[in-house]
Amino acid sequence: MSLPDPKAYPAPRHTGDEGEISARFRPATAAPDHVSGGTAYHYLSTTASTDGEYGLYRVEMGPESGGPTTHFHKAMSEAFFVLSGTVRLFDGEKWVNASSGDHLYVPVGGLHAFRNESDEPASMLMLFAPGAPREEYFENISRLGDLTDTERAEFCVRHDSFFL
Image (cartoon, rainbow, N blue to C red):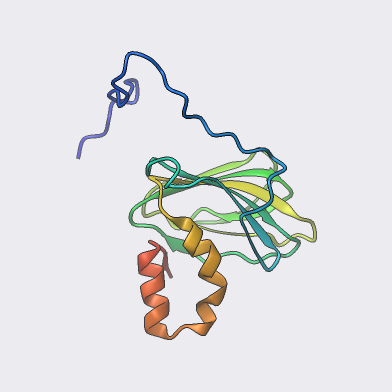
């Protein structure tokens, strides 16, 4: 498999000779789209709104908020950008305390995990590329304990999440 030239732009996808009015603005004051336990999810750019290019979410975790255990994705990369507080990030080898401005990129297949172990809130951006409908995942992950082993396995496969 050959990699794209990192110095070349992708082929044009807009074929018109003029631009179009298609941008979408979301104010920082917008209410979260989903709240579960001590975590609020802001659906900034979903796979539906970006035509599958990427998904961007702001995640606001309360103090001592858990997160997913070590897992990987077979179809998408994931990136984390810490906005505030301290987020524990696992890069497949070690845990690091990430703070405002720190970034972790996880290629397809890369092991990773995250959580907020501090007594302070923390927030971060999560980017998935290409986009995937993560909204259903965020909205239902807290219900995994209510599912049978078979249903739980199907949920994880459907959401490209493979836990160790």
